[in-house]
Image 1 (cartoon, rainbow, N blue to C red):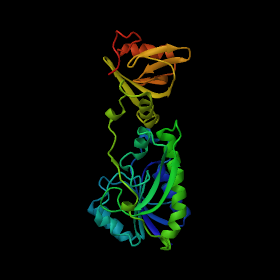
Image 2: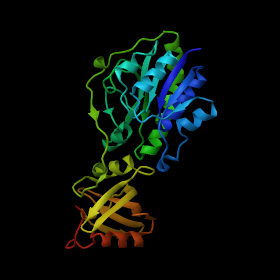
Image 3: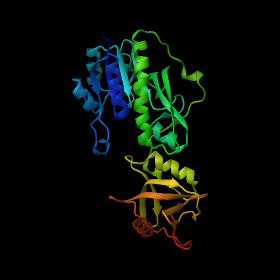
Image 4: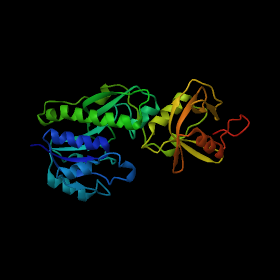
Length: 311
């Protein structure tokens, strides 16, 4: 039986560990992170590993000498990284006999870097995917050993796309792991697959909506960080309001202002409005247009063109 050390987090990581077990891989150690309250919507890799009797390790620095020595003692055939948050040093990548592999949430070499699922939504992509590749000391580098395409629906959110990625990752591993174990597969250089792109981690300011955006650009931002992510927001003269969900609308509304219609409120952008579905004001949430209108007025967003809009 082939053995592996696994570094994993997220729903994608949880499903990936399951795939290894289902492929007959013995996972001798799981390195992961503590799960904060905002991530309780998915079963963590640690929860799953605990059920399977897999030893779990949470380290403040994965690349420490302590971890390196531990993995040396385990002497695994493979090392797998599934949505792990740290770059793994070359000294550790060299330990597994059959190689070290990472699963990335895009069709490499496109969307290298952090938060690929969020970024593909921001940019309005209609197709993304998941990639298994050999790890090198460079981020999302190394030959590709398997990919699966994932279609993106017009109203896809980061949550729904993450669930798709988790299922596609499971399928990809079930297809690819037996071939890796039997040395019946070779990698493809990313240099042969076209132009690469890279995006860094997302900052809170990246999710601020501006009246100069098109309605589609604003909608893309909203769905990229819809619940359970922290949400897009608008800024008025007196504060911020978060927008967990809104939808494109074909009516008219002055950019930077809101307007009442029969089924709710519109929020105007450069070319068209969005119909507000849910707003969040600090810890309060509301789908009530009357409450939403009050909240918008309170931060300086008005229906009247002479009043303040959002910046």
